[in-house]
Amino acid sequence: MSNKNYNCTQAELYAVCALGWESFGQNIEKFSSMKPKYTDAFLAERKAELEQVMLMHNHFQRSSVHESMRIELKQMAEKGLGMWKVLQSHIREAFPGENRKAKMRGAGQDFFDAAYAFKWEACQNLLLSGNTFIREHSAELLANNNMDPAFPEAFAAQLQAFNTLYLKYLDTVKQGELNTRSKADANNKLYNELRSMFADARILFKGDDATLKLFSFSAMLNQVSGPGTAGLKGFIAGLPEPVDVHPGLELKLLESGKTAQIGEDGAYRFSQVAAGNYTLQVKADGFQTLSLPVTVNTGSFTLLNVMMEPEARV
Image (tube, rainbow, N blue to C red; front, side, top):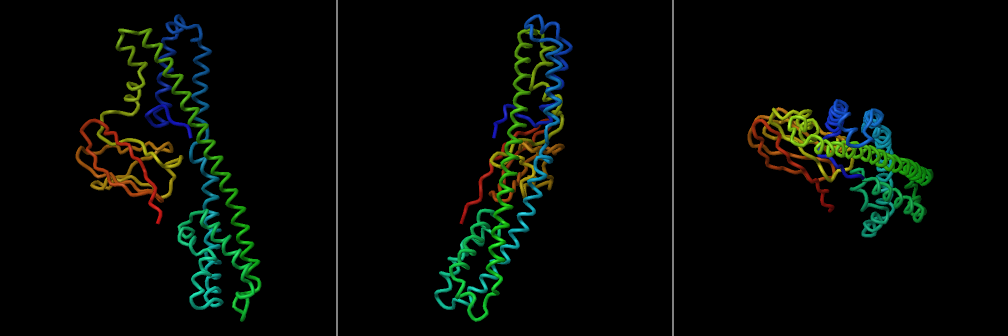
C-alpha cells in the first residue's frame, strides 16, 4: 500500500488543490514568466486531473463486491461449522473412551474456535481436516448406522463450495488493495504537483506575505478544515484500508459518549468538542481495545495518532 505524502483527509486534499490551482490561475502570467510550462493548458490539465481523481471509485464502491462476498462466505462458513458439529457427534459415538480426544483433534478440533470466529483459513482447515478424517475412518463412522451414507459426499461438497468461494473472496481482496493503492498514488500525485507549484510561488512572491498565504498548504488546509472549533483528530494506523469499514471499528470519547467520523484512509475527527480531559476508547474486531488519555484545548484541534495492535493469539 502506498504511503500518504499529505497529512489530511482526502476531502481536505481535494479542497486545498482546488483552491491552490484557482490562486494559480489568478496569477498565471507571473508563473509563466518564470517557467514556460505554466500555461492555460497546464492549468486545464491539473483541474481535469483533480476531477478525474475525485471520480475514482470511493471506498464504498471499491468494497461493495468484497463486502457482499464476505457475507456470503460467512454464511458458507456457518453451514460448514454446522456440518462439522454433526461429524463431531458421529466421532463421539464411533470412538468411545480415551481414543476419542485424539480422533477429535485429527478431525480438526484445534481449528474450531478460530473458525467459529470466522477466521477464513481456520474454516478451510477445519473442513479439510474433517473431510480427510471422514475418508480415512469411513468404516468406523458408518458402523451401527451411526453416520448417514450420504454425509461424506455432502461434507466433501461443502468443502469444495467453501474453497471455491474463498478463492473468489481472496481475489476481491487483492483487487480492492490494487484499487486502493491506485487511488493513493493518484492522491499523492495531486499533492506533489501542487507542492511543486507552491515552491515556485515562494520564489515569485517572496516578501509578499498576503499572497504567499494563497500558496501555503498549511494555510489553505486551515481554511478548509476550520480552526475555530475545539476538537480532536488524527490517523489510525495498523488497519487495512479502507479503514472505516473495518468490522467493529469505533472511536469514542468515554466522558461524552461522542463517536468519531472516520475516513477510508484512517483519518478520524471529533468536531465541536468542549475543552477538557477525555479518554479516547478505540475498538476494532481482531485488535486490542485502547484507552488513551487526551486533552482538548479551546479553539484548536488536538492531534492524536492511534496505532492498533492485533489481539494476542492464544
